[in-house]
Length: 191
Ligand code: AMP
Image (cartoon, rainbow, N blue to C red):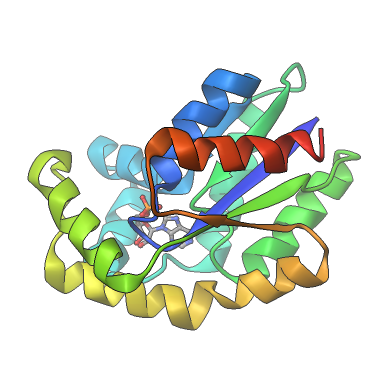
């Protein structure tokens, strides 16, 4: 079972590269951002709680996200080739919960694909995406808050996964296909 975490700041290309990884390896996609946007659209209690955090560029509380992730993972069933976790984990508590969840299933994280992109490029990409994404959080003000959140709460995970020997550093600036070629090498090394 291939369990890939795609890791990086907002705008680093996680969604774009996830699509290519799914096409190549036939793994299931779990994007916590997409699941949350689905909850908001459906008007659920979780969606209502989450939207306040999302619009402020803050993280939705760990307990809510971890329960949501477990339910989403269970819903995929057992007959799958693997999963790409996109936008999760975003905190050490979430990474530990993911390790526990996978261990209970006799599995583990196979590799963490770390897309590294400089801040100026990230802000440029998020603003450009805002023109077509329709996402309320894809504007310059919220993008800057999301980056602050990333550096304070999510970046520490890089060291967490380096210590576990799982972190594959990928230069996230270049052509989509060129970046994917580097990702493919990292995944094939653990397959
Ligand atoms: P994304 O689509 O991954 O950029 O996520 C959009 C927003 O959803 C984030 O800025 C957070 O507010 C929230 N979110 C998504 N995934 C998580 C997560 N794993 N933990 C906490 N909040 C999350």
